[in-house]
Amino acid sequence: MIKNRGLAGKLILLILSSMLVIFGGIFGYNYFLSRQIITEKIREQVSTLLEATVRRIDLALLPVEKVPENLACYLETMSFESGETIKLIKSVVVGNPDVYGVGIAFEPHASGLEATHYCPYFYRSGGKIEFTYVPYDYFFWDWYQIPKELGQPAWSEPYYDEGGGNILMTTYSVPFYQNINGKKRLIGVVATDISLEWLTKIVSSIKIGNTGYGFLITRNGTFVTYPYKRLMMNSTIFDYAETRGDENMRQVGRAMIAGKSGSAKLYSQRLKKDCLIVYTPLTANGWSLGIVFPMDELLADITRLNQTVLVLGIIGFCLIIGVIVLIAKSITRPLEALVGAAEEISSGNLDADLPPVKSKDEVGKLTESFQAMETSLKRYIRDLTDTTAAKERIESELKIAHDIQMGILPRIFPAFPERPEFDIYATLVPAKEVGGDLYDYFFIDDQHLCFTVGDVSGKGVPATSNALIWKKRKLRPFELYIKIT
Picture 1: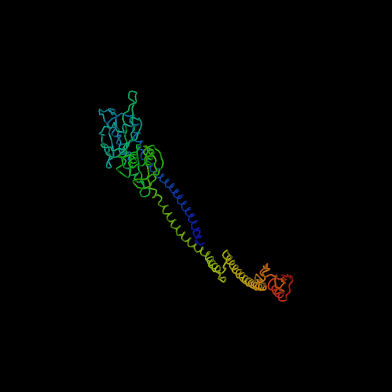
Picture 2: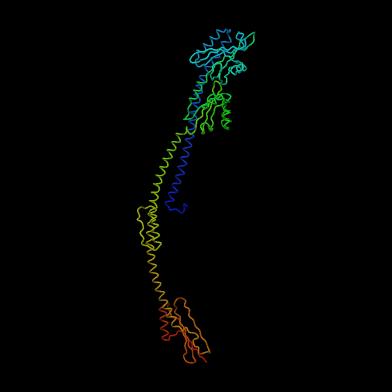
């Protein structure tokens, strides 16, 4: 326990404990504050990267929207001839390198031909412009049915266009109409296809730290791009969350398909780490782009910095321990010497050497006090010895006087055993060791008893000597004679 430790140990322990609490508090506050600041900065940087990527995608998609919209406006005012329509489609594809393919899907018999399905289509393949007719029944495909039913342009969900472009694509479709017999009638849908290969490259190029990644989902939550290619076009973010029982991912998916922007913390099953996800929607088609980055990689610099600070703090702490030990020892060393000297003094060695006074601080004053105490004790013991010797001498004299006084007094009773007709008894109790009183009794003759009581002036040996002289001279201050018959 601390109360059983020496002064140096207490000083070292209390100072180091206080320093440990203070430095620990400062280091902890600095770590969490810097972590919070850097996290916010990283969040801002990732948000900036996210917005830049979204703008990059939107800048590619939004001009594409103008192609079918302008083409649809033109088609609403022209008469359809097979050769002119095909030339028009080809010129649009040639003039817009970001467009993968363009087709015009007519309603049955609306093209002026007897064909029920008529959709001329130009697309890019191997650096060339190829032509084909869409061979399948497109009336039930989303890229045709949705704009037809809504009466407005719409982006389709990603799909693999087998028989058309034979690639993974998405389509921006614009319906066009003509007035026939005073009624507005749907003639067809202008479909502009965008290859998702470039979009995948843009999202895949997003790198945050060493393992951070980006992904893109549609308005239904389907993965358009993802590091796990098996999930692309085969799974939704909700399937992914359900498989792993990740409620946070499910909440993020709901926010993303709702067209919201935000961020959330979640555990990445792919990276096996705690991560931060930042997401925002695309302006063009309502899809949502998300970026996932691990917290430990983003905080690696601050972690290394804090580790360096911690190591330096430990080294500094050890140096401070050494300095404190030296200071404590310099303070307590004279005290330890004083303790040793005090123990010798308490055992009776009043000549014990005290440490020299090197300063006028509390230790120096305490040493001077010990020196003064040692001198006082020597003088006191010397005086006490003299006083004791004098007292013993006086007591010896008094004892001698007492013995003399008691020796001159008769103390044998009965005093006259041969005389049964009377009895006599006497005692003397002096007020002090020796008194000036005395008594005596004796027969003058056979019939007369004399007893005397006297009080000699003075005390001690002189009074006793006087009493002895009086007895020898038969000087009795008070005498009484009694006749015995």
